[in-house]
Amino acid sequence: MAPPLAAPRFHAALPRGLLLRPRKPLPTWRRAARPDDQDLYVDDDIGDGFSFSGGKYAEAEGPSKSDEWFAQGRMVKAHALYGNKEKAKDPFFGLTMGSGSQSSGDVFNWFCAEAGSSSNPTVLLIHGFPSQAYSYRNVLPVLADKYRCIAFDWLGFGFSDKPQPKYGFDYTLDEYTSALESLIDAVAPDKLSIVVQGYFAPIVVKYAKEHQDKLNHLILVNPPITDKHAKLPSTLACFSNFLLGEVFSQDPLRASDKALTSSGPYMMKEEDATVYRRPYLVSGASGFALNAITRAMGKDLKAYIESMRSILASDSWNTKTTICWGLRDRWLTYDGVEDFCDGLKHNVVQLPMAGHHAQEDRGEELGNIIKRILRG
Image 1: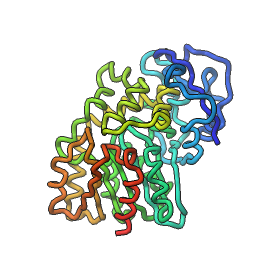
Image 2: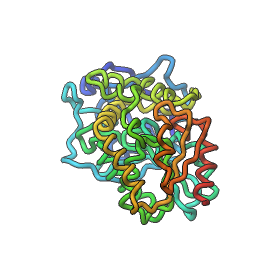
Image 3: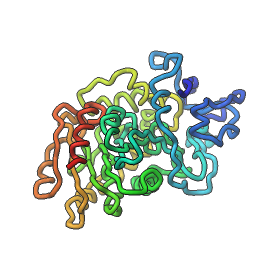
């Protein structure tokens, strides 16, 4: 089991280069995630000057829920970074940032949690924005008896790499589409089914359009699909605000707790909240990524949604498609969803008690629905 990671002290927006400390060895789990970067940084082990510790939200001593989750997964290399691989510098002072904001090599590291036999049909579980693979923790065991299930963290989230924007990955929707193709080639080279939740659905549909021969079934969970869905809710849009967006995206409670719980009626358990909160506590890399992703969504989400509707309504779309909808979604209204699906071959399944993140709210229920859909 991975040892606990002590969050560095909070140094309010000071660049990492100003916080020199004696060299410390990386924790074991961090070495597993980044096998070649132990000797690259001389001050903090993974902090970058934008991290928090202590107070009410600090983790207790001993192994945490986050450590336990990390121990269940593995790191997969996929998608080459672009550019000349120079060290990322912070956008305020131009000084070299910590390892959390650096690319881990020529190819990015993705955290993947897997369950079920490799001899079973593959199901890829894709989390939404902003979330983590951890949101599928209650879905994985439901599917594992009949399927090989893989849930992964997108770049910029959870335990996956979070390079500083403009240093190998810019978090645009086009880049995410290309990166998804690389990851699927790495973890599921043969046929598979895909489940995707929330705002990353248009990216997955764009990928699926060019790879229908690989797909058995596509399940969209609360996807943005109508014109009304093209505008991000204020809880997310605030991360792209001029100047304030940089501050808000570095706030662990605003970036994780509030962003997740405002989308539905549920109250998250504290032990689960610590898993979502942890990336923002230990490094500013998650916040910089969140800011960049939100800006990209604000710029291109409308066009991607229009493209997704066009693809799903096209005569050339032959992939079995089901839309699952948590009716207590506070971000995306259900109005217009059934109208869109009327006349098409796409089924709609309602989850009356789930919000936007249906796999978080009603994981076991969603798992059983997915199983029934895949069985036909």
